[in-house]
Length: 439
Ligand SMILES: [Mn+2]
View 1 (tube, helix red, strand yellow):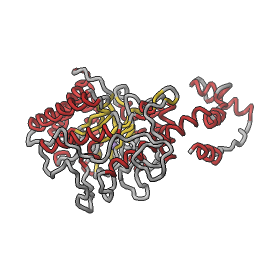
View 2 (cartoon, protein in one colour):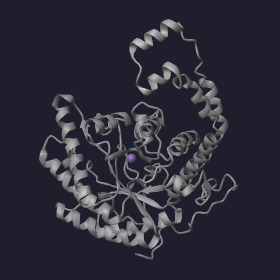
View 3 (cartoon, rainbow, N blue to C red):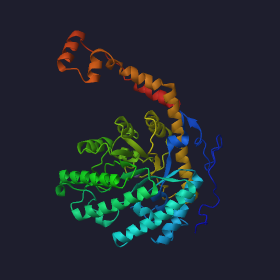
View 4 (cartoon, rainbow, N blue to C red):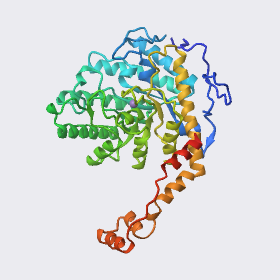
């Protein structure tokens, strides 16, 4: 099992700058050790492969059965299968050349019939993971607990109306934090899949939000108690599976964290497919989270906004990746976060090599985005235009507003003296043309 090769015929993916269009098993833009603005591409991008889609994805959807057959899967949710899958995963990470992976507790080890059995399975599998991490140098970008798939969580985990369910979720998170420490995870993510409501008629919103905040406070306390050094992240999503989810978008989560005094303990893991589901543009939550110093990591994927579901597609749009990388480079990088491919091949993409083609294409899309962003920032044309747009806040009455020392009386006096402000063009098309110049 340990020496079995699952991805036969594919070796370490090379950098092949200038290769032809048909070469999709090499990087044309991602050159891991190339330095841009003082950092290697590998460090700027910190790519991570997710376990759930790439190694557990079956192609099943609400309308159809599984379509994907994987050589490590025998259809059994056994420990043997879990170990085979772990070896396949590390072969994939190594050949692809990524330094990180992410997983839910229940992706890597089967859930037992009791919590004790689930914990034993998780400990045994993560012993193997630790061994493979040491052998390959590959690390955990983040761990998370699956608090949404099991029927017990159908009415929520931390926001469940039954405290017994909340207790179960807390016990699961306790073990998840211990596993994060054991594997040296750099982050721990909370995604509130069922933390929300299907109908307000049966829901005490204030109580649920208070319980969720108290649940997070317990997690912070246990993290500190066991000396776990990792960044806590919350991943916003507005809906699906719930009709409404409390972690609606970046601004909602930031407001929640600040209201309950949790903002110094958490940052955000932004997934653009969730952002577009919230009715925002692709990069909106990246920009908002970064503006508050709260952008911790990115689940790099995309959706089909015309479809309106969370389709978790591989990010292939160069304009999107450029705008995301512009925010990341402007804030000096994501560390300890990274770009995690929370993305799945389409259920019609049934070849094993499609897993490689998808990841390589998305890594190259982000590498191009990074190169474009660096040019935009180095040339500074956009930054200078934005600076000039706000110039009136650097002197006089604008400066007093900026510093928070102005009064309404002073604004009135200024206006009486200066009359009507002049009309200023927003220049949207000029900005759009300049961005296109860099793509
Ligand atoms: Mn995600």
